[in-house]
Amino acid sequence: MLTKPSVNVVDCLQHAAECESQSARTSDPHAKQSFIDLAARWRRVAETFEYIQRVDSFISEIDRKSQELPKPKG
Figure 1 (tube, rainbow, N blue to C red):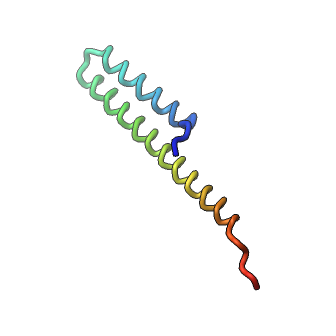
Figure 2 (cartoon, rainbow, N blue to C red):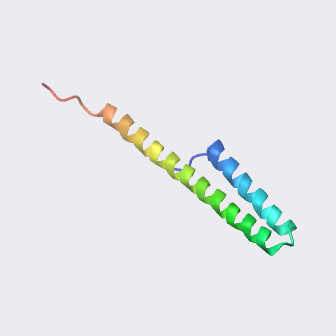
């Protein structure tokens, strides 16, 4: 199931793109590498938010389905 990316994911990807843009504009090799590394970190944070979103959806689906099960007689 595909879901719309959360605001957090979109924000992280925008930060990563900004870092990549800064990297392309600088001529300082150390700064360039720092921006590239920072972009990779922002992308990793975005992946973490996506994972959390998938787990949350999975848990919500399990909760929903468990409510549909017949109640034990007792």
